[in-house]
Length: 272
Image 1 (tube, rainbow, N blue to C red):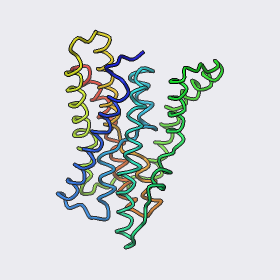
Image 2 (cartoon, rainbow, N blue to C red; image 1 turned 180 degrees about the vertical axis):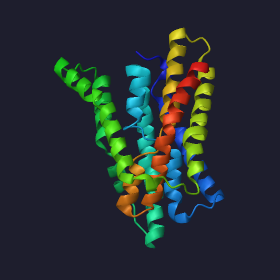
Image 3 (cartoon, rainbow, N blue to C red; image 1 turned 45 degrees about the horizontal axis):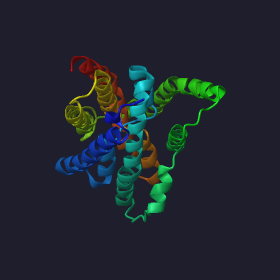
Image 4 (cartoon, one colour; image 1 turned 60 degrees about the vertical axis):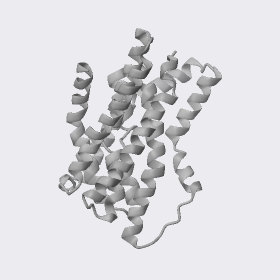
């Protein structure tokens, strides 16, 4: 069982706090760099939110095993909620500026977007755990086999995405460098710093097992928040008429850069 030092509210609060601060920093950077108003929302989303499902879950499983998946799920809850509220509204604002129209987006529409299959599955599993129910072994076995497909399917999906976009989508544009800095340096550094403060405050009198659990939380959250941009950035941009090409370029650049940044993050954790 997890220590009370790493109760769910702590990693969720850290993830929410870091993502929200990153979002507003990205908005400030967009204005400072004079990013065109028709792509500021896309720029902000690329800067702030990471691919926590197709890449995040397989990475968490590969690097930290089943123990790390708990914190990956906590991060997913925060990341998805922030994307479908702050990020979604920002992309829709871009689309409105391009079309010259004003969209009416109600709270019901946003709540409907939040009800995704992964989120429903996670909430159901939380309910099962909290209720103390024990699922039949064959159900657990099927889920285990299904979970084992996550990594290969994610790699196939990412490869198809890069192939379909083509080399021309890798053209560098203003703001991409700042997106890379925010995605792989600034936002993970903020998360790492907040986790370090939390560990410092909670480590007094903690056992070695509790300190190890806090360190695992820090490593998983920092890794998750420093992954490539969300694939949904492109999908939502295409759906509502925002700058899809810019979203695609940002997604591809962050995906390619992650081939270097993910191993670098793992090396960093071996040092600190």
